Image (cartoon, rainbow, N blue to C red; front, top):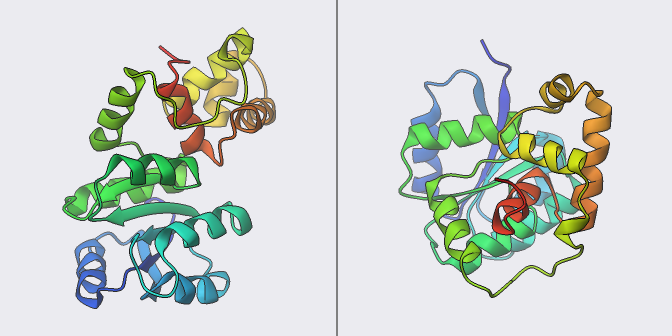
Length: 217
């Protein structure tokens, strides 16, 4: 049995919150530790609840999900944020993925996908579904760049590119180290260096950047 994943949910619609919790109740390794009706209430209680993953709505009163996501990414970087919203505009997807979200789901997602996304952001650091991938592919084929390029992709070394490719293939640092005959710590160092170079907030942002800018095959 996999390790328990503690989850918080922030959504101003009580019925929706309860519905999500009820749908995920059969999965014994997912435990809800916090419910909040807005971002401020979430942040007030997040340290005590200490969740691994936050299911975050975008439009909420008092403090919205965008502000709350940025705050969590800055102050609690080990907590993964999974956006769960009705807003399907590309601008929300790219903005949130560039500012600390670990995944983006629409509220019509199947409970099985929500469960899968929770498990993946908790264990791998990101979840990119077909919806997000379609946006990536679309944006990759037009010339407008919404992310400021902080480094020339051609300056990536072969080792860095190989690490990046394995990260995008969803391998863990230990697995990458085993494949490349280097330590997991070295992999983490390379990943952190790439994140800093490209202005990525987390692993999800790094993968998002790499795919968007054709840095991996």
